[in-house]
Image (cartoon, rainbow, N blue to C red; front, side, top):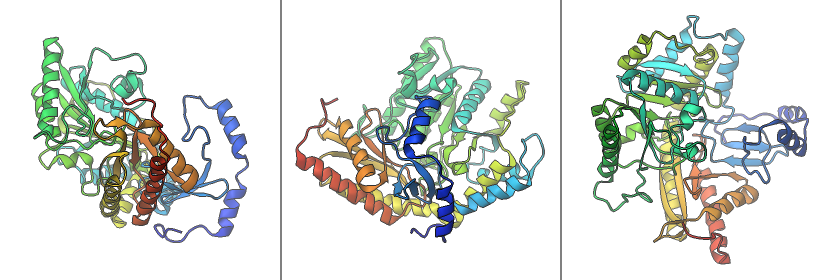
Length: 466
C-alpha cells in the first residue's frame, strides 16, 4: 500500500466496512436510474464504477479492486486524509452553527487564507461551492461598478447556477444562447487558437482581442463590470495562459471601469506547485480584484470562498442588503479548511506537485516523440493536459481516440482519467496532490501501450477531421 497516510485500515476494519455495504452494483444502478435525475451523469456511463471507499490517490470498488485516481482534484490532499476527518469529527462533536454567532474558526481561517494572497485581497465571504462563489463574485463586480456587462473567455465554465450558465459559453451555447450583456473573448490557446506558439508575443495579442471587445461594447453604449476568467482554463482544454496576458487584460478592463475576477475553483491551493494560486503564474505584478475558490479547499467537504478588496466589499455593504449564507463559514467547514492548509504545508504538497507534475509532463513529452497521435503536452504542477490529434499539421482533434484511451485505462489498468476541451480530445490530469512519481510512471507506461496498440491496429476511429 502507498505510505502517504501512514498506517492503513486493518483487515477487520475493512471487513466491517464492506459488511455495511448492502446493495449490489446492479441494484444501486437500477435505483439511481429510477430516483436520480438522468442529467446527473456518471463517469463511464456504459459500465460505471461503484466506489465504496477511498484513501489517498486510490479508489476501491465493491469487490476491493483498486483504481488510481487521476482526476479527483476536489480531494486535494488525498481521499479520506486522517487529519481532515479528525478535524471535522472533533469540531462536529463540539459545535456547528452559522456564522452570525461569533467564533474563532472563521477569522482564523480567513487570516490563514489572507497570508497566501496579495495584501489587497483582504476581505472574505465564505460559501459552500464554487458556483456560489462565482455567483457572489458576479454580484460584487456589478454592485461595485454599477455596470452589468461581463467579458468571458470562449469555452469557459464557471458553475451551474443560472447566473453562471449565462456567463459560461460551454453551457449557454447548448441552451438559451448568449445574453446581450455577455461578451466572449477568444480563448488564449497558443496550440489551437488564433495566435499560436510561433507568435512573437501571444500574451499581448490575445489581450488586445479583449481591448477590441471592450471598444465594441462601448460603441453599443454599454459598460463593462468585469472580465471573468479561470486562471488556467480547464474545460477549455487545460490551457496555460501566455505570459503577460492577465496583467494587460486587467489594465484594459480597469481603464474601462471594470474589475478582474480570477476563478481559482479548479486551480488554487498549491496545485501549481511553484505558486499557491494559478494567477500568480502571470507574475508578481499582477493581482486580480476578486478571487473565487472552491473545490480543493474542503477536501471533499462543501467549502468555498470569495476574496476581494476593502473597496469592493464596501460597495457591496453600502447597498443596504445583508449577505447571509446559512452554512458558509460554519465552524466545522472552517476547521476542515484549516486542516487542509496544515496538510499542504506539513506534507510539502506544493513541492510534491512540482516534482511529480514536472516528471509527469516530462514523461508525456518523451511519449510525444514516439506517438504521432500526441499533438501537445502542456501544464503546470499537477494540472496537465495531453492533446490527441489525428494529424499534427492540421491539429485535427482525435476525440474518439481519446475516449478509447480513457475506456481502456479504466478497464485494463484500473486508472481513472477523463477528457476535456471543446472536442473532448484532451486527457486531463488533476489528481490528488499526494500523487507519486511511481503513479505518474505507471500511467504513462499504460498510455504508451494503448497508443502503440491503436497505431499498430491501423483502425481509423475518427469519422472526419474538424
